[in-house]
Image (cartoon, rainbow, N blue to C red; front, side, top):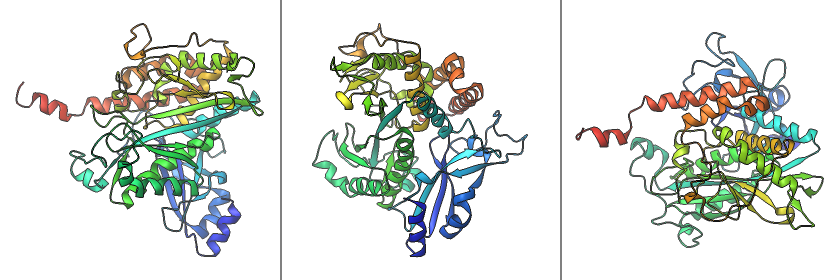
Length: 448
């Protein structure tokens, strides 16, 4: 919505609250709620501030040591939260409430390089310098449970009841039970400026997928993070809970976030060769960059401990670096034709921060074009069983090490950004390594 429209709705008493938020490292929206009149009088033009520790906290909001961008030694000061008024929208599932997303900036107005939205800004600038644009779309999956978030917390997230009694991939009958929530998601997200294409039942019990309408990368990433929070809030309003955890149950498929990407110049899809009616040289080079650099950028696709549990053979998640036409066993699935011809990056899970995942996808692809790489021959068959193919990193520790050693990542994003995210990853590994799991108790309590 335009600022003028917000002013009108505030005058008419239809909006009284504006959430001012920015996406943190974990993809969460953090910020403040302002009275709508104060927002219009002060924040819309001048922004607000938030403690810079928000870039250094873990999931529990503990400020972690070892970061240069913010620390106890410097007193954990403030960064500016600068509203991007193009993101202003009403949230239909919240009463009389609007939302605007922000960029994180230093006092001199420059972007905080480590902030996720800043990384995507950088890659979009690189595209613009080449006279290019990109279209992107996420495919997000989530699990819906009949238990509320409070009930899940009190039970330590054990014995939760999926909203379906069996797997519902492409089913239309059983998902009707969840249609109160899914219909609200489709319609209210679209009303919030996040156009939805469709929803469907997915392979696991209680699992659903929602597809977004193809958009520019920054719009898509903004919609993605708002969508995740909105789905949780809509589920909560209905006494249920939704989880985007990449791998909730070992015996079920995980929650993915497939990313569709194409590059255009003017109105032309550069991935498509109209004469050959097939992928272009540009397409092969872009895909070659993804194949070469995605392993060392894997942290940006899989940023949690749990993400790597999703990479299992026969699980619908990729385990190998290969590409194929409409092949769901490879890391990169190529689909469509003509203007709709595109690459589907199947590596990210639903835990991926879209700003980081989009930035990494664009950076790797553009590097392939610059270096004149080639994607090689199309792969046919079951990539899960092919031992000749390169594998994805096995865990977060390995992924952090690859990112740390990546000359490409350091050249593209800068040492301070790479060091920041490597440190973030290693702190998460350290936290997991020092924890005691249910698996250990079941295995060792009596029998060791």
